[in-house]
Length: 271
Image (tube, rainbow, N blue to C red; front, side, top):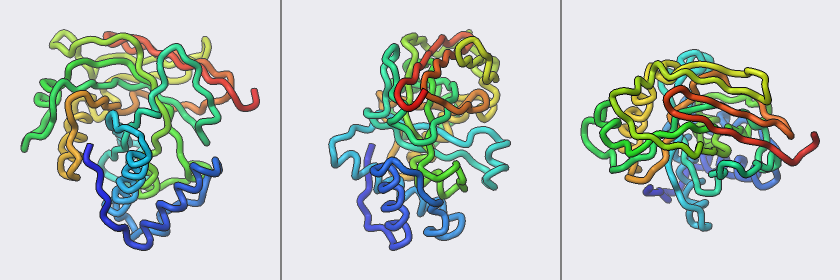
């Protein structure tokens, strides 16, 4: 992924400083939307890009992207009419079977998704679901641990975009399968359990009608922002059901029909 180092306007730099301090001090901060021009999503992406460039300069490696705000109800809540995206770093990847230290997060919530692993670049002038499918090498079940640096998740669109689309951590299930005509992604059913309790359920249709729509949207948008999707990238395509708060000691298990299963166990903090 190409990262930009264009100097930020004063408001954007203040937003970056506030979010960086929240991460470093492990303490949520006030919203940053008051520091940016109202509704200026491009300014928020500039903050995100500057933060990413700092992480890469410090040794992190970009491994993919995530799509957020794929549910129309959530879009309506934030007053937007499109999804957003964030960057996935290698440090966010939690290997399956290894407990996740909850103290790595501030206000974690979890959601089950379908992950795409790209087999080739997605840079064409026209990128639709067919092109997205053709570029996919494998799909996998995934759990995204979303996390906001903004106190009490009091976010608007510019808050979440500047805050790397409220990204936290993620884990992919061990299963991989090729995307073929036999698998109808909108009809894939998802169940997410905390222990034995069913806490979230949904289907692929909850993700922009089809997770491939989310991947195609991301590919076109990332291309237009000058950082196109590349072969090998992991893409978290968006939640298939409502996200659920995470606490110390929680053990989650998700099953996505036709795709596979994925689990995450949380340690640390006060049980």
